[in-house]
Amino acid sequence: MNQTAITAILLAAGESRRMGEFKQLLSYRGKPFVVCCVENLLAARVAEVVVVTGHRAADVAAALTGYPVKLAFNENYQLGMGSSVQCGIRAARPDATAYLLALADQPHISTSLINRVITAYEAAQPLIAIPRFGEKNGHPILFSAQLREAALAAEPRTGLKPVIHANRAHTLFIDIEEDAILIDVDTPEEYRKFQQDYLLDSE
Image (cartoon, rainbow, N blue to C red):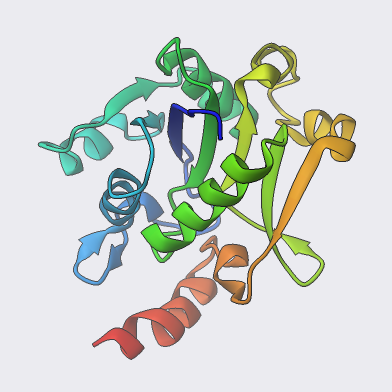
């Protein structure tokens, strides 16, 4: 098995327009979303964690005080998620062999699930590894540093979709038995359902 130095990139730059409040700091089990995500990533088998900030960057940075993460400010965050992915890649350690993309509105994605994706990636050595539930793809996504230049050359507003499409033949789909990989929180209604499904059961 080849040695991997995986940089986890947590995308936390968005404005949360549909939510109506800053979802990176919404509460999950008594902690802000972004803190939960960082803790899960730091406990996983990654070499470093890069948190891409944008909107309310200072608030995100304050929430992460004391955590051994690298903060990368995306001045173009309004261009969309693709620009944040590119910002995270540029901030990653130069010897990174792969990048794991995680979303700041998925605080329920456990370290064990993250490690499961990493283990499958390391065993098969594909260019891209994507967890899926049924026929639907989820996060976190892992992709090889061989695709670094292609990712950086992509149109920021479209993100990695063209890169993934172009490399579908070299993509490993990892079947996951839980739909957690599909769940994110974009609206107040989704947050209320999320609280019912994930918060209340844990109390």
